[in-house]
Image (tube, one colour):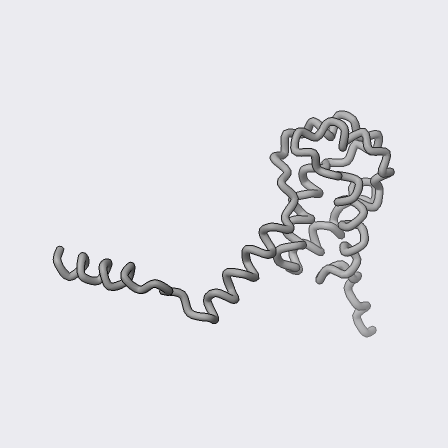
Length: 130
């Protein structure tokens, strides 16, 4: 259809079709994505973990915390046992040796353990008045 072709030509003829506000938003999104840990959930690291941590799950949760600090993330962590949380990591490095992505897993676990208590939903619910 001719009107569509004209619209497409006009759109793509503009050398800078993105507004300054849109550029700022794109920069924020890209910046956040660059901080995400590139785990492929291959689970090679899990076999070596003396704490039997579900490392891919924890990395996925860490990535979620890096991208958006939602209440559901805090509730998910609160539902997990202490032995399942990133603070249970011994930083032995056995997982790191097996990671094909060369992720510094102990470092990620330490960072996650540090920010986890600050996530929304991590504080226990306030007691109800009697």
